[in-house]
Image (cartoon, rainbow, N blue to C red; front, top):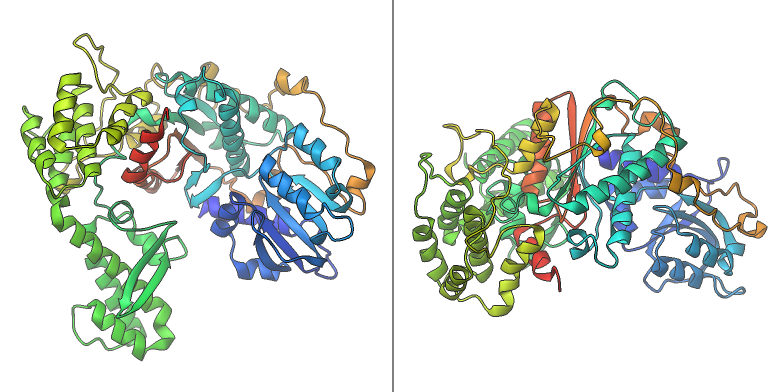
Length: 609
């Protein structure tokens, strides 16, 4: 649980306990904004916060009841919206919302906003002002998101606003590296110019952190750590396919919103379950193939019944049996409810699969692999896809996925052929943007006869007699990670920044980059700003203060950032490599929310809008 554990400890130590009275605990309010609440809810529990004197967690953007006898801890992002809301809480000198404010920004606050705060009424009530530098959301133990909106700016480095977008993303990734105590070599996919620009800005940020804390990245194994910057155009196949591992399949086929799965537990009773790592059964099952999930849930349930000496009415546990057991055994209600949830979810996945998805999966796998299940090269893919496009039962988005996989297999098609495919599939004109905009990711969509072939990675052979026929595809990122670890990754296609190499010249702290040296100092805050506190603005983080509690284990890490978002199958690949190579840990994530195929198509549809 490295990411969540590290960030949870940082929130408790550097925010909640910071400036808390050691002799007598003061009760306080925790105020979070729409971005920091994701971090807090992912990494802490209410009982932990209550034990540290937090009475209630409030959302900055909402109207709140005044609590003038209590101080508030603000953990917020340094945006104009959040700073304005903070100032408004104290705009009335006689009727402030809280007794005082301890303000913690998730990343460095711009000078202009710092000036605005120092001139406002809130300055008189501020007891602490600290930049904690945790500007990412740990989605899982090895997965992060930056919660950015999908932006075409990344793919248009010369467009207005792209520079500030890249700088923000670089700062967020830098806080991730700082939190993990990593000073990695940076590599990037050379085919996309924005990757190189992001790599350079990120290097400047990391050098600034390293100058402040020279021990960042120390250790023989950490010297091997690499950060690989990819853009979504490197592999559009993985986020388009129907995946048959439990997590990816459930998020694709079921109506799961904000990681909450709803189902009818009994007649008229709807149950809501959060799918996260607090559920040990979910954590164990999420990357398993759907064919194994129901069997494994039943096996685990039998073992649980045996351990607890619970009598089951039959050898094969059904959802109805579970419901009866839950009623009879209230002391085991929580554990049995977990089994019930996952049996429900697996059955619902299979019900959807057996509609028409099973037929789609064969066509998709053949398109992705270029061969059939026997390894024979497919000569006429069109013959396979036309029946799918003509099928009235197949949804428009599923047809779009098939068309895009076909286009990818051909490295682009003619305008005439695209028009025919769209007409066969009866795709509305406005929906075709999800196809055409894929060109913004650097993918060949519509091409003339003179197209040049883009570089394609030599794939590792992974299909064996044990491979499920409908799950032959492996996300390309797994090959990239393993090649990087083994020193086999193509240096022309994935160059190191400034000819860096693993473990070279990384033991010395670099001089802080010139643009940091020459940066105009921020405005001096009025003395009253820091009254009655040991307040300071800590620009380059505090990860080094509690190394024992941080993610600073001396192992090599590969950190993968995908601009355009990370899919669930790619996250699974990161866990698989970590499990197979004990001397390495893979951390993976993207700038957007985790990608489902629907979200990916929606994001691409909006590109260039």
